[in-house]
Every structure is written in C-alpha cells, then in structure tokens.
Amino acid sequence: MAIHRIRLWFRRWWGRNRVTLAGGCAVVILAVIFTVRYWEHEEGRAEGRGVQNPVFRSLEPPLVDLTLLRKAKAKGALCLDGSLPGYHLLRGEGSGSDKWLLHLEGGGWCTNAESCASRGRTALGSSMYMEAMHFVGILSPYPSQNPDFFNWNKVKVRYCDGASFAGDVESEDQSGLKLFFRGQHVWEAIIDQLLSEGLAKATQAFLTGCSAGGLATFIHCDNFRNRLPKDTTVKCLADAGFFLDEKDISGKETVRSFFNEVVHLQGVAKSLPSDCITAMEPPQAYLLSSLLCFFPHELIKRINTPLFILNPAYDFWQIQHILAPPESDPGGQWRRCRMNIRYCNSNQIEILQGFRKNLLDSLNKFQRNKKGGMFINSCFVHCQTMSNITWHSPTSPRLSNKTIAEAVGDWYFERGVVMEIDCPYPFTSQIEFFFVLHTSPKEYMELAPSPRRKNRAGCACIVSRQRIIETSIAEPAGMRNSSEQRAPS
View 1: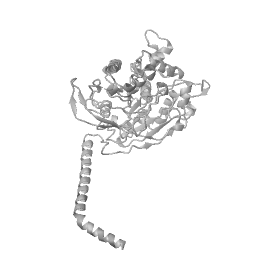
View 2 (view 1 turned 60 degrees about the vertical axis):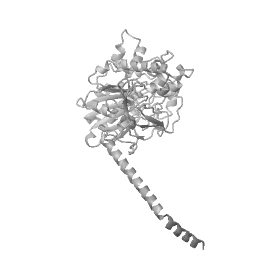
View 3 (view 1 turned 180 degrees about the vertical axis):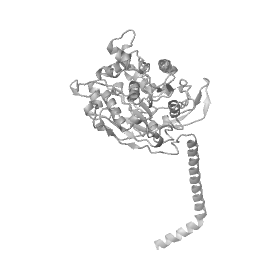
View 4 (view 1 turned 90 degrees about the vertical axis):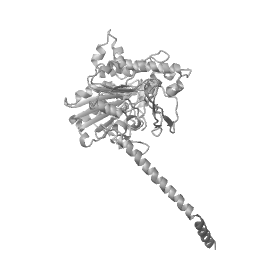
C-alpha cells in the first residue's frame, strides 16, 4: 500500500515538474559546456604565449629518485654525519640528450660543532633523511614551464656539508663530536660520477645553484669549466647567491661574523681562489682574506666562465638575516617589515633602498662584462629558479617583457644581451611576490594578474591581487639555525 502511494505521488510530481526539471538540466549542461570551452580557450592563449597557465592546466612534476655515490667514502666525500652524498638525475631526450644542467641545492650553513651536529640529523646534513624530489622550475621537463632546457639531462645535487660545497677538514673530531667537513670532496666526487654518466661528452653544460648553492656556483664555476672538454660550451647561473657584506641595522657586522665562523670551522679557504686571497691590497691577514673571498663581490672579479646573476634587489632572506636579524631589533620594530615589504614604514623603506643601492654598486663592474648576464628584479623573494611560478608562468616577474626563463635562455644561447635591472620598490614592474619558504610545499602564493599602468616614475607597474593559501607566518629563525627550503611550485 505504501509503495503504491509513493508511485502515485511520483507520477503526479513528474507531471507537474518535468518541464522545470528538463529546463534546469539544460542550463547545467550549457554551463558545463561553456566552462570547458572557456578553459580550452584560455589554455590555448597560454600555449600561444609559450607559457603554461597553472589555473587551467596542471602538469604533474616528475618525482626523481635519489642516487647515492657508492664510491664516495674512498674519496673522503661524505655528508656531515658520515653518510654518502647523493644527487637526482633525470635523463635528457632528443636534442637535449648531450646537454647537461646541474643545480646545486641551497640550505644555509652551520657555524659550530653543535649546529652542524643538529644539521646532521636532517636532509641538509645526512642522506639518511633525503627522499625523492619533484623536478620543477629550471629542472622541469615540460617546454611550457622550461622552454630552453626542458629536454636536457638535469641533475639536482643535494647539499649536505653546511659550507656551500667548500669545506675541507681531514679530522673527524670536532669538539668531541664526529663530523665530516668534506664539501669540497663531495663536489669533486659528484662531478667525477656525472662525467662517467655522460657529462664528459656534453656539448653544452650549465651549472646553476640557489642561495647557499648559488654561492657554491660562484666558488666552483671555473672549476666546472676546467673539468669539461674545451669544446664544450660551459656557463653558470647563481640564483639568490649574491650575499652582501653589509652591516645590520644596529651597525654590527652580523653576516661577516657568521661567514667567518663557517670559513674557519670548515677550512673553506682551501677551496677559494688563491689569487683572491693573495691579491688583497693592502695585504690582509690570511684569515681575513679568506673570509672576504667567500663573498661573491670578490669572487666575481676572478670568474672567467660566462656567468649569469639572478637576484632580487630586496632578497627577503638577506633582509631577515643580514640587514635586520632579530638580534639587531630587540624592540621588534622590524618584525612585520622583514616578513613583508608592504608593512615597512618610510624610514625602513629608505634603509631597504640603501641595501638595493649597495647591491647594484657591487655589480657595477659586472654590468660591463660582455660575457655576463644579469636579472635584478624588485620582488620580495628568495630563489626564483626552483619555482614554476617565478621561473616561467603567466604570473612570473618580467623585465623587458621577458620571464626569468626567457631572459636566461636569451643570454645562454646568445640571442641578445641581458643586463636587466628593475625599478626600485614601489615603482616596480613586478608583481609583489612573497613566498613563505618556511612552510609546507602546499602553502604558496596565488597571484592573479591585473592590467598594467604607468606610474609617475615611468615604469610599468602590475597591480596585483594576492592571497596566501593556508599560510601561517612565524618569526624567522636566526641565521645560525636557518634552513632555506625550496620555494613551493
């Protein structure tokens, strides 16, 4: 009886509402068709510009396994904890099968036995904690994300020595702790291994690195050139590795003191250019000379290999740890400013402009280097090669209407001179990038492009909307405990 009543009710309801229901379904179907067509249209526009639109299309980055150097121990090439160093290799294809791109991982430094021992319990000091890595940005295998190097052999070299691949101490006993300061040996062993994997037959080779890995690129660029055949085209790129020898806001030489501890703890002087150490005028003490030669502004004077410098004028890692570290700001007046440039007051902005000026002054002679390239934007960011968003996407920072990937490609393949310097903040041609590098990979900045307009300085500005996804911003850790994580992509 109950079933009969239900059937009777349904027939009456269907008779009254079938026209309305059919109309509703038609509207839904049309909406779906319109949405799909719109996505396809936008995808096509993005493809036509040679870039990938992340809103409408998602390309899964390849997960590349870790390869350990099994013969490294015999060469004394070990991570801080004595484990084997490693790298990730993604083989090239087609026209890129005889071309190689290496990327040196960044991740800060350690300055004493205790901090190095702590580091040895992480992936920045031990391969025991290293996992497979996604290849993105300059390591991406997709032409829409990496137009010039997508099909090259690509190598991510893991960083586990705490001294920019430059430490060289034979003793394992460090203040009663067993530690291995062998970054220079790791560098040599990695290159030896890659030469046997096909690097020795490369027609093109490109050494790159980010942050502490960018500093390592400055240190090892010429050595990389010398390890390869003379007919191989070899060039280098340092991303966010141009650390300034600047006093902090309290007048203290924070970064000089910090690097001094790194250099002398790990015997880095042996890995630095000898002509740099001996060329100091007037003659400096050996220890001071080796410290100064750890700074890029001295290293670039002696690099003969073609070099590209990619750096933000307002590198937020340097602002947080060199210019305005927490120790220099006991009252906390810089707390919000060093987390986001939009929160800086006029006095703080003036100090940041001085920091930018000192960076450009340090690069003044380099700008006349006919073999060199440069891309100095005004983003509040740190490391831009290892993120799809900053490297090459519709919302990437641009100078002369070129993404970083396009500028680097033009320089590498000699399609044009690339010596780009952005306008100062806030008169900048950049979207205000701010990546929270101390959060999980899922936490990233979502940017929506807006129309360009001309400001009174004559620079093309992009007024952008931005939103932080699932982000919790905390006070940055001190430089001694810092670990520069990869920017999310």
